[in-house]
Image (cartoon, rainbow, N blue to C red):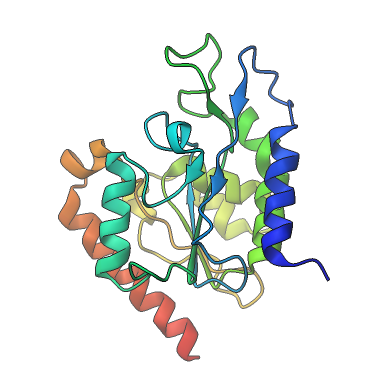
Length: 222
């Protein structure tokens, strides 16, 4: 049996050789922080794509990255007991699209901008492999693109597919696929500077993370 940490390492190694999207400029694939858990985690946080300010500089998908999204995420994770400063083993974070741009100015392709459905589709096998390795109790897609990615991984779920066309306001903090077969999905807003400062705001996201923790705890107690 392959060790889960090794399996994750091999997966990201495969992703770095992918090339399906045909980007003209070289794209890097940041790897998950070694502090994250890699098996039977409580929550798998699924974001959209690695940003230029944090993962591109550090080479890591990490709460410790030097960007506003990571800083806010870590603050919420600490406050609500998902992690401690020294123990992140109960969580894991990744992206629907694993590539990020390695240039400073950005290429002519879409690699540093918002991901499109083709890129999400190309990366769905890597997402499925991560879920199979991690066996998370709950998956928390942060943003619509992350939710779309999960709908491609679980196309048999009519409930999940039906949510993709709705606005985030209508689905955030409401469990999906709580059927005992697939991992439950608990949508969240992407914790970007825009959602922190404009809409829905930090207080609303804080409340949603509180609800996520309550939902995770309820599953663990069953």
